[in-house]
Length: 185
Image (tube, rainbow, N blue to C red; front, side):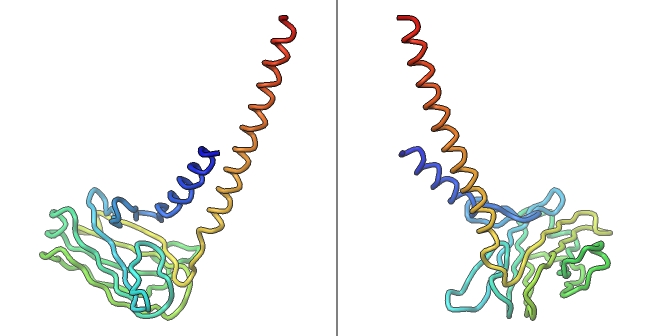
């Protein structure tokens, strides 16, 4: 029984570490991979909890996104940041919601302020270097909290099936061993 409880805890704890696209959660740090380089990503919304987020934006409204250079080499490269609406077509043709023109950031910090007017699916794009040599693409949603519950419930269901299967298999194995012992006697 302890194993089952521990498995549940590990499963539920691991779901918080899932990430979209180029974003990952490592030691409470949201990291964005831009080609061979890393940037720290953090988003904030002014609400009752002063929410900080790494991936999906909790609700529409004024939002601050901060990108901090992790690899110092990025401080010498022009960096461009865009947000587009997610569509079925190519990202270049997607409706642009926000654009920060390419510039060099010697202090290594980009601060984006944007008021998301609509809930929905978006894509963030970060380009670094001449001619957008390095890039990162990360999808995110605004105002769609709870999206991971579907995945969590699916995984919980699979875990329950696995536990059930192991129990049935163990019982059959014990019966087979008992029968074999009786046959040998």
